[in-house]
Image 1 (spheres, rainbow, N blue to C red):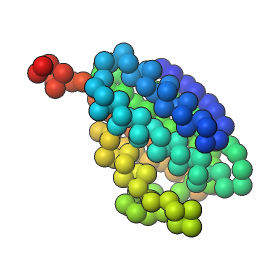
Image 2 (image 1 turned 30 degrees about the horizontal axis):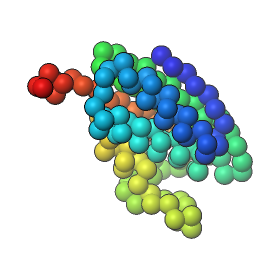
Image 3 (image 1 turned 180 degrees about the vertical axis):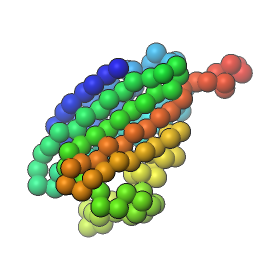
Length: 142
């Protein structure tokens, strides 16, 4: 398991991607699997940076573990939280339209991961739990 805690600065999104990629290497992922998971992590971390701490900087936690070939990646913040998680997960929904945000972050995460769970409490923060099986049966066809 990896536990990484960092400030919600945009530069740290790249660190989260690199750490995730390094952890994934043990599964000999395809280029597509690597790109998918790194994109999902980027979106989750960017959500923390852009939305969680509107008045400044805060903490973001990245936890990565696995069981067999199934990776579980959790990205957590302790910011403003999400009032309506279901609404926030709708494609094109954004609270930052003036910043030209597309509102596709959760949609990308759901598209690239096998399972996504978002737990949030207004005023206390948000936790995004993502799962993805790397390799599996398609790895044995070639």
